[in-house]
Length: 317
Image 1 (cartoon, rainbow, N blue to C red):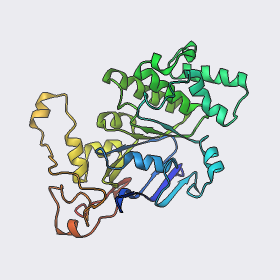
Image 2: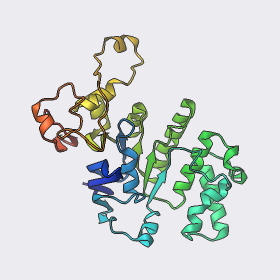
Image 3: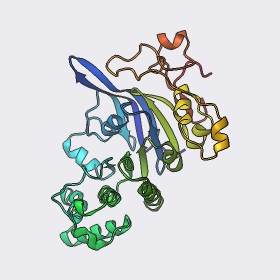
């Protein structure tokens, strides 16, 4: 079996908050294999972006380990992290805030090449034009500033920048959330074609469960800093095991009005607990319609219940 490209082991990220600790990520473990897309879903504030930024070493972890190509990157110093950027890149959520308004598209895309002294000036210009065309923009657009582009075009520039150093692994942090619906499909199809053409590996974070299903090989479900379930995309969407996953998927509208009318919805009641003071047992127990006594007393571990299908729930045998 192919070795994982990325391994996350018991990863934690705590933020000091008024003398206490906000547990944004609390013991998360999963693997990402070469050329696959792992979708990461969950409600706002569940820790998806914090997890992604710790993996990229943009935040320092509070515990656990991160292995890239079998080697721990946790103790990397500044110079080693800089070298790691050749293999690991990030596409940000907001294409309006993630581009420097004082730089042209050419300069934005060339910046990683300049920082890493990757090419000569002539070769940099050639590479930038190649990248612009690769993401569906004309090479002469490079002289324009970000305010002269639409949201979708800006995100294409952000994608081109992330590809400049030929990375193997890219974190896509809700790359379509700030875009019009008509543009979202274009960006998703672009990411998919780039993956096939360049052999890329993605960690794809999104609230759009339909897009995650279309793009992802496997899907991980996160709640209050913990992974609740992870499984191949088709398995998770057809046979979700965790009550939280069932509630999330129940919210996806079905285009067939008859099926939509007759299906049974799983309604999640109550508020999401605070990450500063999470429940003692299962973090989902206060909202779970199936919770039993053990759920309030003992935290379940993420365990494999079927081939490639893991779930953190006491009630799943």
